[in-house]
Image 1 (spheres, rainbow, N blue to C red):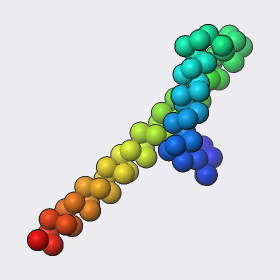
Image 2 (image 1 turned 120 degrees about the vertical axis):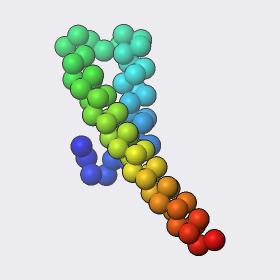
Image 3 (image 1 turned 45 degrees about the vertical axis):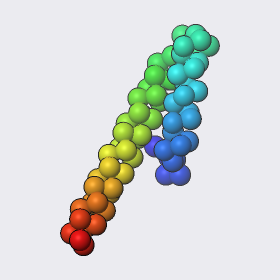
Image 4 (image 1 turned 90 degrees about the horizontal axis):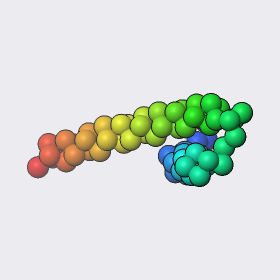
Length: 67
């Protein structure tokens, strides 16, 4: 996965792939490649969301301890 990929870019690319698949704009020759890329993007987005959730929970706990 590219190092400069952000959640927003990954989500946008995933939405484009989804649209292509839904409208059957993907040829059979590249279908497996598109599905593999979508799987990679989903994993990347899930990882970002988990990391963000962990960080937010950490901040909330710190705030609660400061009370």
